Length: 191
Image (cartoon, rainbow, N blue to C red; front, side, top):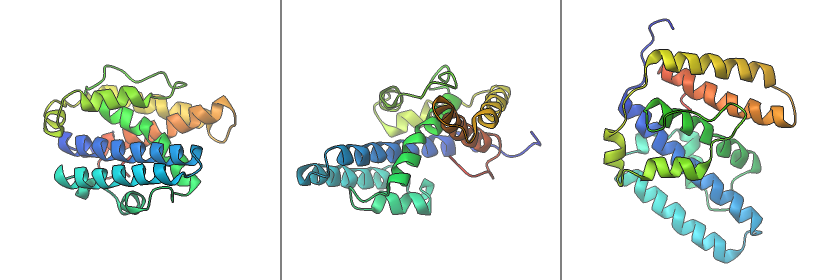
């Protein structure tokens, strides 16, 4: 580390909440595909989309949403390109890192194991409110962040461009590396 400025606890918490909303939306997009874009399911998804928009506004999270994320969140349900769905689903790994960095979870899953969305959902919702979630985060020691970053970097370098199980490891490590890089230096691209 070169003494770069780390994001604040509040910035990390808000970023985690935005990732949570995005991953949930991507999961809905996947479900719509599996239901062959049934009109009744699209209507349910549109209701969920409206609620997410109100939630982001109510919790003052709009500033933490990037322009690309805003376009995805504003898009009609069932309209996301498949690549956007796939990329966004993997962002749960960045969410897991942010929750870990705030000490909401004791550890990250091993590099070859995906983070489980029901577990991440429970971590965020267990506090009962966004205000409580934000106030209960404590920054993890910088040395732990650095060690996790080095591990993610090594795994990503070893698995990048490979197929099969290695492709899963590459996706996990890439998202974790991105999140950890931002935790080390707030000027890096956020997860």
